Amino acid sequence: MPRSRKAVRRRVAVALSLVLAIVAVLVAYGVWETTADPDQRDAAAGGTTAQAEDSDGGWTSVGDHEAQAVPEVSQWTEQSTQAAQEAAEAVSSVVVPQLDALFAGAEYAVKVVDLADRTVPVSVNENEIYASASTYKLYVAHSMLSALDAGTVTWDSALNGTTLRECFALMIEISDNDCAQAWMDNVVPRDEVNALAASIGATSTRFAKDEVTTTTAADLATILTGIYDGTLMSASSNEVLIDALESQIYRDGIPAGIGESGVVADKVGFLYGYLNDAGIVYSDKGDYVFVILTNNSSWAAIAEATAIIYDALPA
Image (cartoon, rainbow, N blue to C red):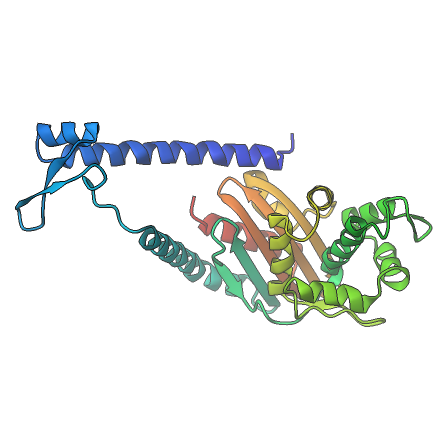
């Protein structure tokens, strides 16, 4: 039975709760054992004034909230951020040589974002311009759903001989081209779709009539991060898009690489020699954005690259 996002998140939440509980017990035990004598332990437990040994071996009187030195919150935040960045760099140092070997003879770009702390464990050629192939439909979907949220169209509005609802599903789930083109030809022009993409930070993406749409791994990571955060559209529109991305039928890239370790909401693209995959990964190791763009490669290589990256991520 396919796993759901909720099931993955529930499993991760339970594991995290167990880790935090263990840490709390260890911290409490450490504080108890390092208190100097029984009177001080009682004082610490009861919240009364106690004595504490200073760094010179002497004793100082401390009050209720001074019995234990607590670092500034900003210091903890800085240390946590530094640790996360160091962990991301460690992943990159392991993964990038393997990706270079895997994609030898091909062109590729990768961006992976840890959605918990926004570190970037892997970034290779993230700002290089690639033919988007059908990953551009993420931007079109954003345009459609934004128009729905604004009330300028409804799900029953006519589009390409059917309804917007049907066209949206076809565009995402089977990567239908006609619905996406009909939207930009008849409802929201390409320059407006382009401007909307730029407004969310996808500034290197380009739409033009009768030309191949181009984008970057960085831009696709930007829109996927916004979708994950729920900051681009209404909550209902956001959920509709993520559900559709989970249901798309092409699963030989990132989803194959993640396998049973999580659930992937992604959009693929294939045009000429370009094979691209970009999605949100809800996994046992946490939530991530994965973007892999290639030219002259294969879905099997994209799946293998995904597995290489995922295996290197911290548990």
